[in-house]
Structure formats: structure tokens, C-alpha cells
Amino acid sequence: MRPLLKSNKKAVSEIVAYALMIAIAVSLSVLVYNWLRSYVDTNPNNTECPSEASLIISQYECDNTQKTLNLTLQNKGLFTIDGFILKTHNNTEASFGLYTFPDEKAEIKPGESFNKPYSFSLIMSGNLALIEVQPFISGKSDKILCPQIASQKTICSS
Image (tube, rainbow, N blue to C red; front, side, top):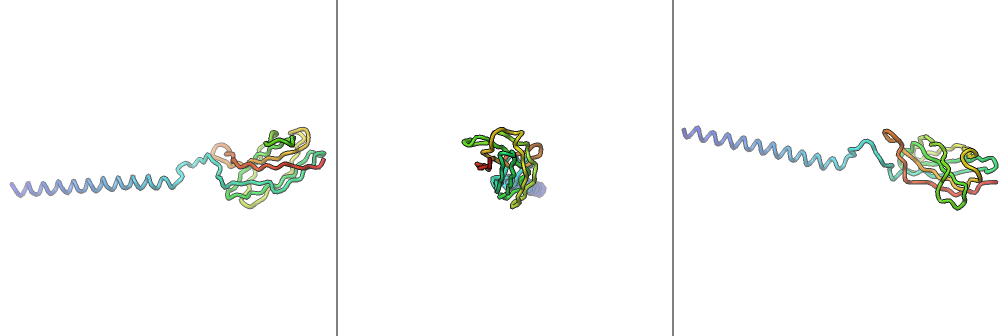
């Protein structure tokens, strides 16, 4: 009976060794998975606008008698802008736009410009004194506003 007991002990130690190898492999795979997960964006619904998104007012022409504004915007950032919100104000001392135009859905790629004439006769009374542009990108369900706002005090012809 002695040889039989000796072989049983050896079989048990091999099973323990295999179990330990499997446990080590599983724990290492969990560690590697958690480490790699920190490098990958797991949320496909970005809720932030990239900080490298930048839209500037490169040129404007306005006429307060005709109540028109010809606006040229340029994307100086690294990401495509899906649109922008245009706000204006008629007070020369204003620090933010009060009168909002309808959202402009215009895809502006990095380095590209966008030009469009606007009529502000229905939006506000008085003379145009401030132009403010806030870019946005499209999310899965709604637009995501970028915190970078381009603002320009205007000097318009009367």
C-alpha cells in the first residue's frame, strides 16, 4: 500500500500547482485589465467639450442703420466644431451677450472659416455693441457647449 499512497500525494500536489497557476493568471489578467482601462475612454458619450476647441471672430462688418452683421468665424482649435451660439448686446458696457440668435449648426473643421450675414432687427433694438460666440459639439443626444467664448466689442457704422 505504500506505493499507492505515495502516488496520491504527488497527484494532489500537481492539482494544487495547477490551481495556483490558474489563480495567478486570473489575478494578473484582472490587474492588467484595470491598468489598461485607465488609458482608454470607456465613456463613449463625451460630456465635455475638448479644451483644444477654439472658435474666434476673425472679421465682422456691421451696419446699425440696416441692422445687419456680416460675421466671419475661424476655427483655431484642433477639433471640428459642430455649431455655435451667437449672442449680441446693445449696451457698450456689457460684458456678456444678452440677445441670442437661433443656434447655428455649421460644421467648421480646424483651420476653416465660416461666413454668414445676420439681421439683428428682430432680435434687439438699438445699436450693436457686443458680439459673443460660443461653440458647441454634438453629443449622442444633445449639444455640448464649450466653455471657450469668443467675445468682441464692436464699432459699427450708424
